[in-house]
Length: 258
Ligand code: F6R
Image 1 (cartoon, rainbow, N blue to C red):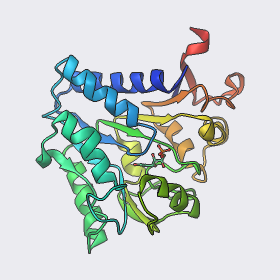
Image 2: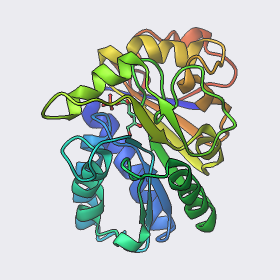
Image 3: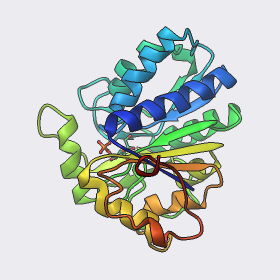
């Protein structure tokens, strides 16, 4: 895994947007899987602006949803679908027929999971996946202790995920479960970006980057992917000691050295 450290959230977001843009310039039919949440918000805003400025056409791309809250009405404030529709699908004009998102209200969740697995397989896999990191180290909704040999699945969310998840909603909601791509999808994606920003992510990013790889810190598993980047702003990287990095972490961009 390459570790890139940026001066601030703007620089981090700008580079992440450039990477997505470059991937689509190189492959206009790229299969993208993009996380929701606060971390990539600015990346998507910049991406939409850059796509217009540079006339990069996303209409041949496919978008795969990483995860969704179970039991939340589709299209309601706070759900992952609405987030992606507003920030990614509409601004980038990705056709609905090429968008595959989980329905958190599906009556048959097993079918929902296998439909997603089949949609990804039919597209030849995910070309570029961008994930954020929960305060407990989760990736998508792969919570600590998760098995790494899973494709899409439903999972009980930890208390911390349920309480922090409230920030996306206008009113208190019961979000006890999530539906998510599994680590098999994450690790089979051709390129993988993990993003984190802000002081609040510093402790978990230190564990993810420095400590032994463990499913108790799902973000650490990203290090086993051959084409992966951890992109952090200086605040999220503040506790990482660059002198004692494990062999599977290589420093790429480090603004303090440039
Ligand atoms: C969202 C997702 C989650 C978030 C994580 C960080 O699709 O998969 O794993 O990436 O909870 O959330 P933020 O970015 O809001 O700190």
